[in-house]
Amino acid sequence: MASKGRERLVVIGGDAAGMAAASQARRLKGPDELEITAFERGHFTSYSACGIPYWVGGEVDGPDALIARTAEQHRERGIDLRLRTEVTELDVDGCRVRTRQVDTGEEAWTGYDKLVVATGARPVRPPLPGIDAPGVHGVQTLDDGQALLDSLERLEGDHGRRAVVVGAGYIGVEMAEAMLRRGYRVTVLNRGEQPMSTLDPDMGGLVRQAMDGMGIETVAGADVTRILTGEDGGVRAVATDDAEYPADVVVLGMGVAPETALARDAGLPLGGYGGLLTDLSMRVRGQENVWAGGDCVEVLDLVSGRERHLPLGTHANKHGQIIGANVGGGYAVFPGAVGTAVSKVCDLEIARTGLRERDARAVGLQYVTATVESTSRAGYYPGAAPMTVKMLAERRTGRLLGCQIVGREGAAKRVDIAAVALTAGMSVEQVTTLDLGYAPPFSPVWDPVQVAARKAVAKVREAG
Image 1 (cartoon, one colour):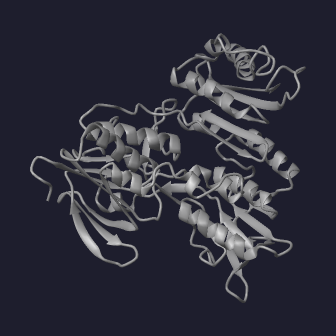
Image 2 (cartoon, one colour):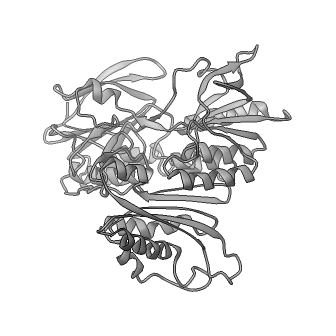
Image 3 (tube, one colour):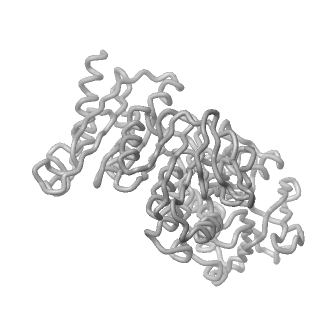
């Protein structure tokens, strides 16, 4: 039981959203007002999962370098953080959670006055034969990254090492680069026709061309049917309907889904993507004392007006700050997002924000598209790199609906221009008038995003 006059906050999940919420709540209320207990089933807390591919690829150190705040540092701030402790049951009516010590199996109940659910997302892992064989790895947590590195260490010294990456989304292409950097022959098996399904197919095609040029074999329309194993039980190949691809290690990059089994079993409301539904304060709908944030929730898409699952560290940290403010007696809201994301494979930069063509069609929007080729700097300035920018605009109104960019150095972060314009509800004509910074080392006199906007304005006028 809590001390007299002291509230009990329980946090499920010790990464970005959960610990940001706990830390912000602690800033607003001291230990004499608020008792905070956080449960994390892994070995690490407050870490950058986005940095795992670069750790595996040897570009950054890890795992310590990827940890923003250690368990000891959280405890010094008055947060009772319990690692290797998994929450197995959520009793909303009784305001308590059941926990299990991962290493000992010991179980206990912990009561709460306020609860934060920040259970994150889980890698998609289809029930294929051989999927659990040694040498098959998902990459979601620092524990996953260490397990993969342990497998790669066992393969050191072997010649002709082969890696198969299943899936060609963000994790898939980033892990393909990581394995290439480690000297592996890399094959990416992609169920779709083009990599990066978060892009339209024409832009995804540019990514595939670049990956082929880097020596990464990309197989389109590859529906994996099983993982084949050798006499030692370890992975030896990945099979599709019509071929086998030899592999010494397999990395699963098939995306993630909200980790909401606890919430579902407790009767909390879930959306179409399986994520928890909250109000603007990140409070779970229909619950007075339960909040949720991070990769386990769905949020409002400001462009389409629909709920959407956006598993990104940027949102998770913001959710945590907002939850912590509200739990701690302050006030904050999360109005929604436009779905901005950037990635890279070797020197190719990939960015998107807003709606794809199929997203626009799905919500009944009529639109035009404009695609332009430009450069990152003035064409005459040394180091000018090519980029392709695609823009979607609503027919008649000209409202900006989305933007995708594929290019070399200086391409990806330009998507932030479009992200701000989307958030503000600007038209493509308004984008053309933005007062952006210009000097030959940084941009052409017309920034590539504004060049695309100019072309989109003309398309809107032609469409009538």
